[in-house]
Length: 177
Image 1 (cartoon, rainbow, N blue to C red):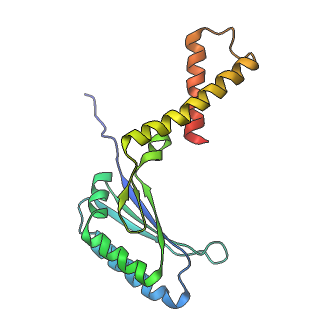
Image 2: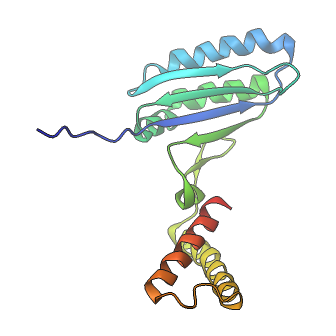
Image 3: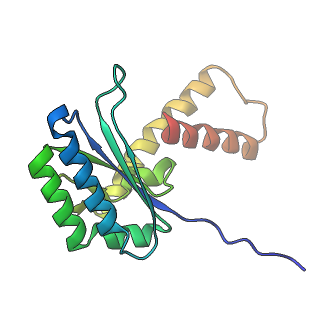
């Protein structure tokens, strides 16, 4: 009997606040409790982690809200509850940044849906994404091909092996560089 394992999908968002003054820390922690009490009512909520500043190292607060799936995270992000809580925090404590964490790595992270300062989603249309990949990939492949030819790398290799190595290098450059 074979046991089938379901892939684990999760969604998290990091809310980053720059230096909350000491006199506002108590109020900030109360607001964090409000976020936890609001978010825990949504399907798929897992937990909220709050990381205060590290004295002498960094002055930022990080709040990480975890959901079991990106879809459940999106439901919370699109909710009036979330918009109200974040708006109140912005009025009390100033600007913040979002960092989405839905398991994206590599090229798909170029076009993940981002959240702007107003809490609204934004991403470029598909045709712009296509051109961005094309204009990133074409020069990379051309420079790589010319460089490999000039250095006489892989000239004795069969074409399928050359193409594999070229693709490996191109994909790696576009993903991690």
